[in-house]
Amino acid sequence: MEGDSLSCVKYLMFIFNFFIFLGGTFLLGLGVWVIVDPTGFREIIAANPLMFMGAYLVLAMGAMLFLLGFLGCCGAIRENKCLLLFFFMFILVIFLAELSAAILAFLFRENLTRDFFTKELKKHYQGNNSTDIFTSTWNSVMVTFECCGVNGPEDFGETLHFRAHSYNAVPEACCRRNVLRREAEILSKAECMSSIDLNRQGCYSTILSSLEPYVYIAGALTIGVLAVELFAMIFAMCLFRGIQ
Image (cartoon, rainbow, N blue to C red; front, side, top):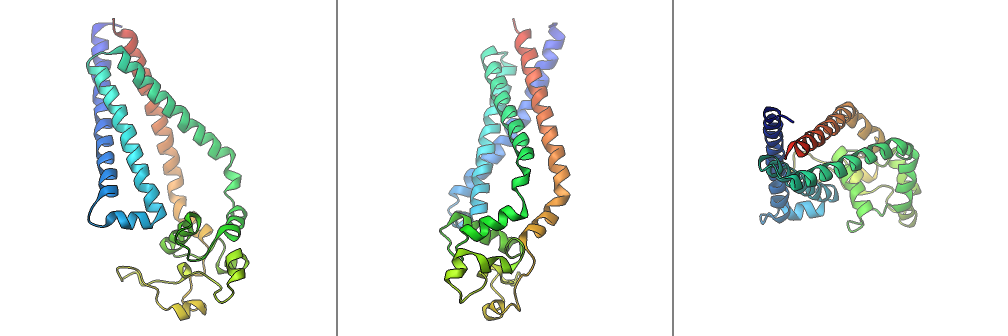
């Protein structure tokens, strides 16, 4: 590779990876702050399984992008073949993992059906038990999306938990809440249990309608990320082969 072309690839790769490094640093700092924050935010995260998983996902993504950007920047600016090789292998592993996840999601999409979630809910749901991950996650989803069960409140009449505790037909997470209050308190527990202040729409249709506008955006972003990673690998190999 000629000197001018090599310099162009070198600096383009450095700039590209510098922005990746900055993004990774921001996400890493945000994830660490959320997890170790002494003001009480950590307790809120720990009490909500969805937010808990999200915080650690942000932390993992930040660490991955931080390392990726660092290897790319150092390898490009120092023209270090060893770092460039590590950078290439790291992106290759991420690329193959993302591609495999996309293929598996396509192949097993039939498992994410209404019937599948209904069977799982009836088998594993344990009412207001906050220590069970499956149950607390479902409760968080129902409160967040203001829905009840997979198809509706009638799903809970067939769960193992509510068969054993027939005094309540639905969990408190299905009750309508006062969103103007800080803790979103239940409007009326008695009226909720008598189906007056009860969310009657199922979570399956509610979540699908909420996520539908973002499906094509997520697909486009996935293709875009895979394309960027592919070009990054090509640039890394061009620079690797051009270094004497």
